[in-house]
Picture 1 (cartoon, rainbow, N blue to C red):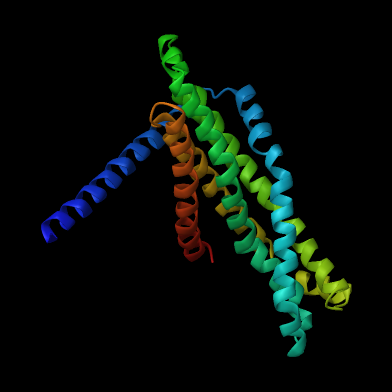
Picture 2: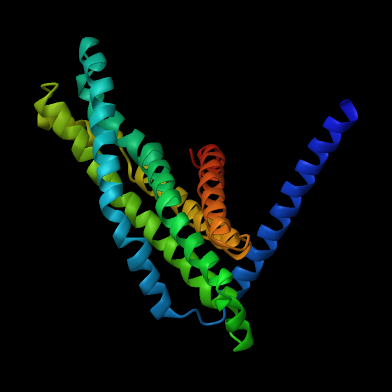
Length: 256
């Protein structure tokens, strides 16, 4: 029984290490292809498809996050006479953590799933094999534009999300908790510096990188058939979210 359990654990670890090695090799090939004239037309198309179409859900997510965060904290600060710090606390929390992490999770669910579904469908219908037959590098044609697009649009979405989140906090603080608008924005100016926002956008660059690479990896290695497309999409979303949380902890240690 113990030996069987050890065999199962060992096989699981070996599969994960093999998968990690393939991802690293794919990432290395993608970085090498970055210097081979990436197609700007494809990059712009992917930015529109992956970024612009995600703006509404990102704004809604951060708006209500700012509202709820203010509802949970403003009354407590007012009780202890610290209402002059509410705006700064909200802007720092959203800029450093809530903004980039929530945008990363939303993009992992929407963008990562879209990338995997598209590429896995191309694999199942043998379109990727057709690219190789035409002497077109699939990494340069499919992965590089998506990775560049994600590394650009995820920080941009984070910036919009930060602004919307702070505005949601301001509306709640002023019209629900009764905090003066001047006190709120004075607190934001006093406690928040530029790196609180740019640090979150640096995180978002890495999150976009992870979402694109994992989405493309699971798309290229999806099982055949419609069921395989669904399994690959699910793996992308779950793995991307887990990696985003781990990467967020590491980047927080390094940046702050």
